[in-house]
Length: 314
Image (cartoon, rainbow, N blue to C red; front, top):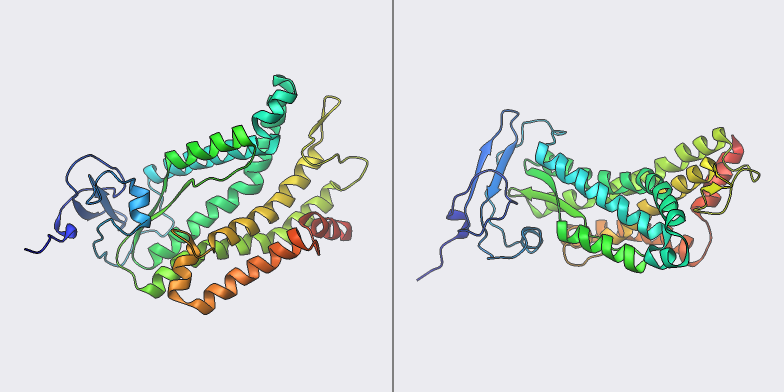
C-alpha cells in the first residue's frame, strides 16, 4: 500500500512554528494579498524546522502569484529580525574584544567599555551586510509569487554567541528566509543568488560612500586616529577610528559573507545557484574569490588602503 503524500495534511498560519503533533499544512491570504502558511507539526518528526526546510523535507503547497506589498514585513518577521540582529551584534562585539581570553588579561570595566564601544561599530558595519542579504532573498522570492519571511534560529544564535565569547571568533547561523511555494529551478537560483549579489552591491557602493564620509570628516588625520579597535584614549572617545573601522568592516564583511554563502555546500546559496546555472555560479563565486584572495592572501589591496586613497582625494 502506497504512503500518503504529506502535502495532503492540513494546517494553519505560519509554517515554522513547531508543535509536537501531526503534520498539517494549509494557506490563507491576508488582507494585503500575502499568502500565509503555518505548520503545527512536521512529517519529519522532531527535526528542527529550519533544518527540515534546508533538507527539503517540509511539505509545500503551490502558491498563487503574490499580489501584496513586496516590502511587507509581518510582526513575527520583525521580531525575528530584531532578535537575530541583536544576537549577531553581541557576538561580533565578543569577537572584536577577543572574548573571555581578553577578559582574563584585563579588568572587567575596561573589557566592558571596549565591548560597548565595539558593538555599535559592528552593528553599523556588519549589520547591513546580514540584513540586506536576507531581504534580497525575501524580495526576489515574493516577486516570484512565494510566501517568504525571515526566521531566526535560536540554537544557531546561542552557538554563535558562546563561540565568540569563549574562543574569540565568530561562526554563526542566525537564521534564514523561509520560502513556501512552488518555483522552478531557475527561479530558485534567482532567489538564492540575490543575497550574495546584494552583498556585492553593498561592497561597491560602500567604496565611494565611505570614502567620501571619511574624507569629509578628516578621519584619516594621523594626529587623530589610533590603532584598530582602540576607541578610548585618556578618557577621550576617538570617534575617527570608530568611523574608519566601520567603513573597513563594511567592505570586508560584505565580501566575506558573499563568498561564504556562494560555497556550493548544504543549505548555502551556492548549491542552489550551481543547481540552476553553473556558469552563473562560477562567475559570481570567482568574482568574490578574486576580491578576497587578492586582499587577504596576496595583499594587492586592502579596504583601509582603498578608503584612505579616496578620502585623500576629497
